[in-house]
Length: 141
Ligand code: RB5
Image 1 (cartoon, rainbow, N blue to C red):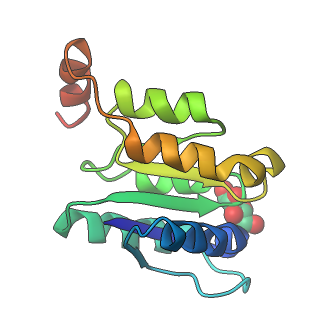
Image 2 (cartoon, rainbow, N blue to C red):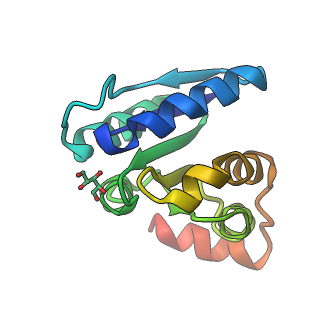
């Protein structure tokens, strides 16, 4: 299961991602927003954090730059959110950081062109554990 959320600046990319996940037969839950009408990104980051506290899933969270969502979602101890602009960083965010939320920049043209590769990498790459486990554990101390 994948949980999605965005603000207005991430709405168009979120809609594209929903179609992509549907084509891949991957289930998702959409926590909003529902249009391009201006909203406040912390509300949607907090909704995702609340959802993930009770459900075993990965998240994809989008705002214009990805920065506001990164700041907001990473205030929650059970979240490891990674702002990724390419496939390589998406892979490393899983292998080294065990990231559970992929954050995307909906107003970044390169991201919009390559979101499928970034998402595929994020969803299919496993955490390496080993030396990275101790570091990840330290994040929730
Ligand atoms: C909205 O205009 C924009 O500020 C927001 O999407 C995000 O990029 C904030 O970090």
